[in-house]
Image (cartoon, rainbow, N blue to C red):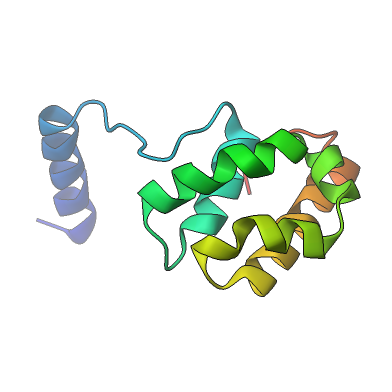
Amino acid sequence: MTNRQKAVAIAAILEERYPETPIPLEHQDPYTLLVAVVLSAQCTDVRVNQVTPHLYAKADKPALMAELDVSEIEAIIRPCGLAPKKAQSIHELSRIIAEKHGGQVPDSF
């Protein structure tokens, strides 16, 4: 059996046993899920789910998030850890999505 055949067989078994995997990060759309995933690095899903409502109250769309100052984002997400870098990343990814993708998270690389 080739590696590809093994991978296909394993994928079939996983699909059968776990047909629907819930996403533990609370989100409303692909953008809010993306932001939550960025925040989840070195942080629990519980903490992310506590912080994101405060962040989304300020900005829940890429264009709105890109308008915020990085320090504003950082202050809100500080409980998630690594706040300076995460705030910068969220700000920049929001700017790129707003400017280059019409405010929609692309569904491909």
